[in-house]
Length: 369
Ligand code: NAD
Ligand code: TYD
Image (cartoon, rainbow, N blue to C red):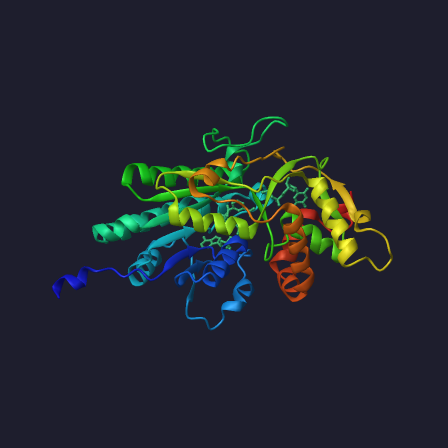
């Protein structure tokens, strides 16, 4: 009888940043796949949007808490009350252009916030009995941008590529990866880190390339391509990223990092052309012209990384993960989703989003420069 007091029944996972783009897709897919209930902590910055989680309204398996990952007492209380078997850490400031305009929030959330979360996890882990400690995981979600920029013909990033972050965003993520690594190495926290390439798909805030182009095209606005548009990214459909995270959570080895990528290297200009061509097919302009007519080349991003490419053979070999979508199928689904969800688009276009677009691109006529 007495021993029963020490039995821990894990019944939850703890997700941070679950109202953002990838986090909300992860929560929706996790629960749809019959995963345990989710405790979702999100500060609801401009990028956090509860409309992403509207399908879970009234669903007792989703417990949402508005709060900051930097709030140590809150973290300690939530962990003690909900006793999750894992933390899946998405919360971050995630947009490179914003980090160039001001890096303070990136340092606060991505570095200090991750530090506080690691510390809270360490304290929580120490309170668990041995058997429960062995099962616990801290999954740290990171980016390929920590590796820096590749020359045109250089081999894709492996997990052993040196860290060479170039933007304030990628530097802050690199710092968080180093903290996560050290908390495993020194404190034995069972951390698994994933480094993923550029995501696209439903619920992505239209400050990032693909949704910005879709939403801007439909609104008749100029489509701003930075510099020559020949920068290369490796695109992954968000639901494939979510399946990779589920796999890493299930079978990833503590202390290991796993690169995740779609094997879809494309130049930015090719991406914008594809978006325009699909919109021409699915929602043609009233004047019969192509959306490509709206493309405009604007001043390049300072310090712009030229190329990212992911070698995802480790996660394929060791955890058996592969993406399901090709770029062709994923981009078609994505555009169809934005066309089918004008109310969501309208919601994010109000308020903070408008202010940001104004600051970043100036008045619409300036963006044509
Ligand atoms: P996002 O900007 O869409 O969402 C971030 C979420 O974190 C938002 O809901 C926001 O409200 C929340 N948040 C921000 N600061 C917080 C804080 N201090 N406390 C609690 N919540 C806070 O970002 P995303 O694109 O969904 O990215 C999620 C994670 O995946 C990030 O860690 C990012 O670095 C990483 N990642 C993103 C991509 C990509 O292409 N988007 C690629 C690889 C890795
Ligand atoms: P982004 O979606 O911001 O992701 P990241 O910078 O993290 O890769 O940008 C993707 C690429 O598209 C990047 O090379 C910058 C470029 N870009 C534009 O050309 N125009 C834009 O308006 C934006 C937002 C991005």
